[in-house]
Image (tube, rainbow over all chains, first blue to last red; front, side, top):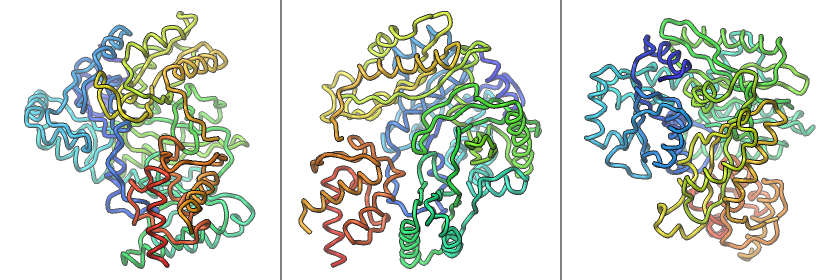
Length: 464
Length: 85
């Protein structure tokens, strides 16, 4: 039995609420889109960290029983039992037979004839491929297996995911932009930073963001003119070395804010669109931590978000895009809404929560989806997590704790469970959805989960 | 500059970027796992090291392995100083 959320999504993306989907949660899509664009100076990108790749498991909670998800490692059997026991209808999980840890799941799939054969049969039966973000690699996979893409072509998706595109769309639509500008050349960046010199001298920071930076990456906060001059020197040296003057970034004033928002729009193939939800985003130093739902907004602030959602949808559709769109926004400390900070025309972290919140968050309650950091000396079995969390939720009628991703707990371990453990401690993340009657109870529940997760970790060495 | 002085400069740069004071760091300290440095902070760390050590570093010449531990970063900075001197 699919959730109403999933059925709406399928209807918008494929024309029918019953279309079977093949999900592929390629969290490294931005890195692929960034190729061919020049961002901030950075060390050459390495392979995607196993922990980030393991986040693909989040897709299992979005998909329904008629769907399929391709994962580079199977769901942990104990975790699978747990999810089923919680009332979730899980998809079929397909694992490519030739998996290599340094490759993306799409690349693993392309190198796995048995899997490709299974996908061909699904394609012949009318299934659509829904990647997290469509790049040329997922497009190739769809073509090779005869799977229809539930999204537009990769060239369209790449174009509309640029932060430069998003900023220009907001400006053209007359939506209140964060003060700033777009740069596409070294000269433009030099001019902009020169123009902002007085602001930097007075201690008001600027943020420089890569056009294709993943949340929290490819972002530099400039707090004084010295750092701005250093950045320009690095960019100049690179341009001299490569003969390439381009740099694709946006430069924005760092605004004091009350909160970050994330809202989702779904644009159907026929152009109709809807605002799915508005959540409050939890961030730490620019890095995404989770979501609070519903967001604390006045009726007028909500109306402004609704209006912006309509404008963004109309313009994206006119530019050839349909599908899921996550938009980041902020509310300033003076309660001013800046409704478009960033447009992510792909599935977002909050997209994957839609089904479980429908099942687990009754009307009138509040919820929080976030990850809890762990430091482990050896891989952790799911039963240990389940036992620990069983002690947390007090009043079971109104409170709930649901583990939404377990693969990220042990992903960075060097050896599998039972093989003696890795020689060094490693970091993991436990993703969970917490539900409570009000914000105070939610805060208590969050504290209790955090304390419990800490008991599962090894004591951390202090560097203070 | 002696190797132990470079380690001290790295420690000062980390304290500036991560806005925390640390006790003495060993060369085996892992930057990401133990210090919780994230990729966003790498560029800021390099800028702080430019100030502290007086060399110019181009991130493109680095390998992520150079950021594995305080020791590997010290190795990289020693090599970079030899090239620039």
